[in-house]
Image (cartoon, rainbow, N blue to C red; front, side, top):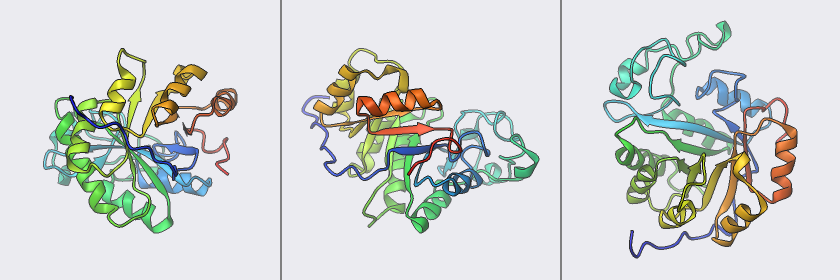
Length: 253
């Protein structure tokens, strides 16, 4: 990654502190429009979602590589066409109230967010082996959907190759590196990828790590924060964003 420019700082960070994880945490079937509507009803103005590719290249929302946990389907989601995926029940596993809720495409969530002035963190969640292509396609689709908007979506991933793909196809969209450990070279990797944020497991943050990220011109965000003591600690450290399941507990105001 020689001669890769450092990230351009977002001097006016446009995103709110509080971000609703997968729409509304565990209160609704994750990554469905029902979840994002419920999160909005609790006052949230920014959401986190997981985006991956169908076998025919459609960008749809689902966390796991496999279908069993959050749909009535079986096997690897990315190996099915969008037509087949669109027929699945992505709500019945959660509750009878949500039975029949479909998997959404990113386009449907974009329409909801843009119509209501909400912000979005799109986690690029590739089916294993498709990291760079998924990053390219998700970023290209996000750039199309948010064209001309003043606040773009924030693209994040645990996979550096996915962020490389995103940078290649839509370099103007902001990117963030997700971390569940502080592996050797994590900060340099975030800089080399032109990231504007580092998004860590909340337990990884301390004053020194926050200061290093801020000194590099990036923002410090946390996942998944469900306890008040942890949220207060992160606010005291000066972090910039908190992803939570507890949309019914934390007031985003």
